[in-house]
Image (cartoon, rainbow, N blue to C red; front, side):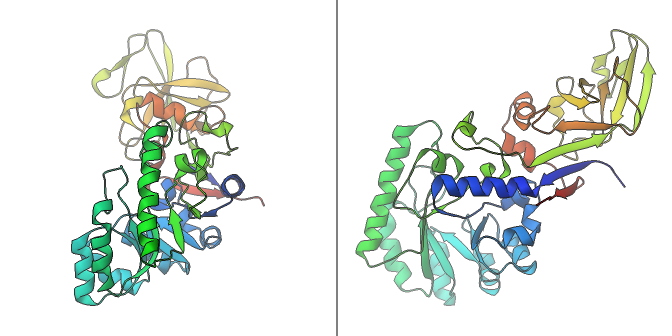
Length: 358
């Protein structure tokens, strides 16, 4: 069996959930899209069944949860395609809605399912413009859709207070318009990880944590506000060791040249598994209590490390990140990206091993 694995600590996940509940005092709708940010926790029904409502991005993700036995509310964050309507009905999914053409198609089909109104407040991605809200509600009256919630999305709740306050103002205006028309919502939500950390909004009753659930900072130093335990460790092993002479070139294009006689080890995980090529000749791993640099270009299925001066044997464990010796943020920074992308891009070729002690 391939001994390259992503260890996923379910106890740490539970701890993070408890900390978020304590911090916000609101119901949690965990964002488990993209295979729960690459962790595959979405496939662990004993964990997911603890929530009354969960959020995914795609109808296919919602269908998978239903087929696995999840009976709670499944909210599709993004308004789906018209071609998804039959599956939305069949699998009892709840969707965000903001598009007139989608709404009119539902009216035409006499489709009936639960929706949350998505309000455009400044993200400018999707959502009902505030000036169109009354017309949207007028059109919805003709439909069989069940309005259950209202929501929006902050664009910069981690650093731009003025813009975020403008978004809050627009969202509250939309909420007032709906209430004046006699609409009462079961769910009112706008805060994802950054929003719930920085804004205590008493008019909302639901939060949508994403990265925080998995124990990683959604912005620098936010863990000073809420204690977190990282959920994942990405681990592989040494499969081959060779001695090479000074001047030897390593990997594709000979992009690295050894300046002394060296010991080079091969690690069987590559860019097809989610190891970014940006780490070529720049990243490092942790092995036998030492950091070892990545040398040569990352290959599709493997990469090489310089283990000169380190006692290493075939089969020795190689840590790519564990947030103890090497953090996920360190890896992301070396790749000039964000931790979300590194985590989500770990492919299905990497075995997920779930850790649970409690």
